[in-house]
Image 1 (tube, rainbow, N blue to C red):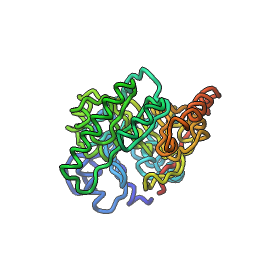
Image 2 (tube, one colour):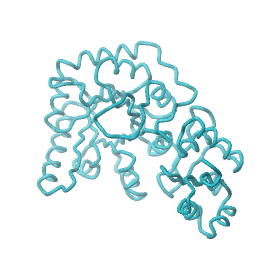
Image 3 (cartoon, one colour):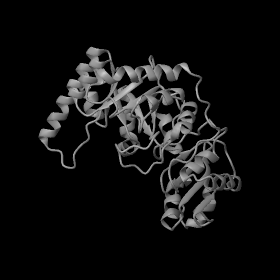
Image 4 (tube, helix red, strand yellow):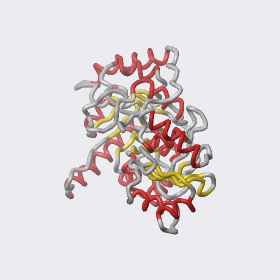
Length: 342
């Protein structure tokens, strides 16, 4: 990335370069539209920089740096293989396991304040129907996610079915004393009395500042997906019940651009997240569960691995979880490796 691709400077300097007198976000957008791949307006307010890159934009906190010093630190991150958004996060870190806050939009990022958890998440089953949820609850799983994806053209019948499935899942989870997270459909989940919801980063961004404020005001426990350092830095600001790290191993469940995190990045996530971390992606057998537990994961997500009859497979997974936690925890590396090809 050359100097024209990487633009870093004060608001006054970048206003002159862009030829406009707007606020930092507008100036950065103009420079990005003119060809820059990454723009950072340094020390705009309260020690925050405005960052605009191919992958993410927002207010970035962390260690205050002048433009030249920040450029050098970012270039070092790029040389290590990080995309620009992650290279800026690394450059602003006070130490290898202390992430800077990063906003979801133009609102100022909140200080990370993770929710208090009364229990470990343990084995975490992700299911696509209330019937399957009943099966895993009967087997003894006590952390579950109902993930029913919206079709391209949902009709009234689909919405009625979704309501019935969510309502049944809430009732069954409450009866079993299990912690339920409803994927995506947070407003319906809140209306029906669900205690938890899981949202991906794109869904949270799409909510906008008002929607995210409503979500937080709902009081529901929030699980958030994360795949990169900038996503982890953002997730921490919403007081999450947990942050998912994935994919730990290669997975065919979703078509994603992300590189496997591996146990090293998982251990780093567990150290740096400031919230419980769940491992997800490619967890098919007890060996992966044990390794994830050794890395410090609070929960281990299983999508397909429980098989047709979870009552038969669950004991081995539970034994693996206990065995992993009984061993010395894997030490996190000083720095994570890149999770997205540049």
